[in-house]
Amino acid sequence: MEDDVLDRLGNGQGLSKIIEDVFKRLLDDPRVKNRFRGRDIEQIKQGFTEYLQSLFTKNSNMYTGLPLSEIFAGLGITKHEVDVFFYHLEEAASDAAVSHTTIQTVLTTLSSLRSEVEGK
Image (cartoon, rainbow, N blue to C red; front, top):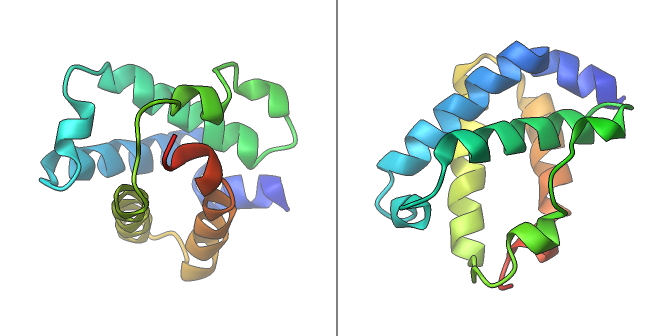
């Protein structure tokens, strides 16, 4: 199932385009753009792309970054900020012609990781 989700996202190249679009939207969004000030956006995009590829493939060794709980420790990310991220992810995937079912699968999977991101 996991590899099928990655296929439906367009594999590495398609997923990279979606992530590029997500971050363009986030950086233009006044609700969250300041969260990225002074950060290496290219590194964040690359890490997130690798994380999603690892999450939706049987090759869990693809992601070599820190655990999410360590990445987000001390940042105080709010539920609202995560919701904004999910909104932009949904819009970018939809614009990339990803099916509603696949988008919901991705969002459901990522929602299960909220506790590792929010309020740390």
